[in-house]
Image (cartoon, rainbow, N blue to C red; front, side, top):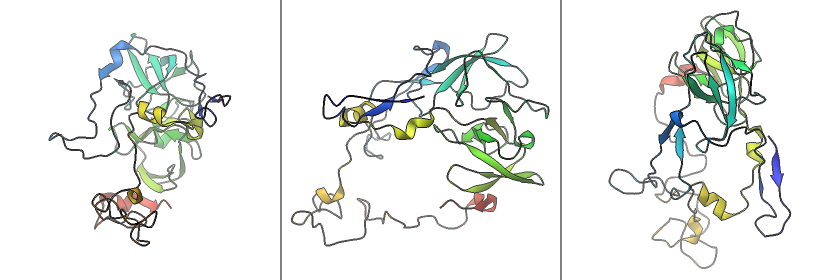
Length: 277
């Protein structure tokens, strides 16, 4: 994938940098793998806004992604690399010998016509897109779509350009360094897919204008300082003064920078070897 820039013929295009979509090989999604996606506008069942800054955006259909990769030892052929509006990464359409089709997360550099397989055997090739147990993946190999619990399917390391790596194996656990920098113990029977998640230049995208943000379903975010005292603890005052120079807080008065909100015991503490920064 590459980044596309524009001549500054308008104010917004001067800074706009978007994907060139060169890796996309198919325009229309596979109909059998689509489901309707209902929008909430950030509102709960009572119609009250519980998550701000959500609403509008282009209509989408949800692509059913196979995070479990539970077709064991059945080799599948990559038919296409597609765009998915519901995630930052690209998705790959694969087909099994019985003509069953599935979507998987597309690793970087995966090409149409290549084969991928999900296996529990130690002799499986360490190849881009193959899904194996951590037990059979060598240390230092980039992996993604990682299971937290055996058989549950990949839950972490699924964003564009991310990958994890095995640092060491001891007993029934592997020490895995996650994209956040956290080192965590994972059971060796948990499975992962080989490779880095595709669309690695996603972090370099510059939307360029407010409208493009609205297309993505993001509503404006007003600074607390620009509000009235009734609406935010930072509001009011003359000019930019606010209320003196207070510690930053949320609209409900909770400190928002560096304040630890976690309380008591967390079940995963015993699995964390080194915390993220």
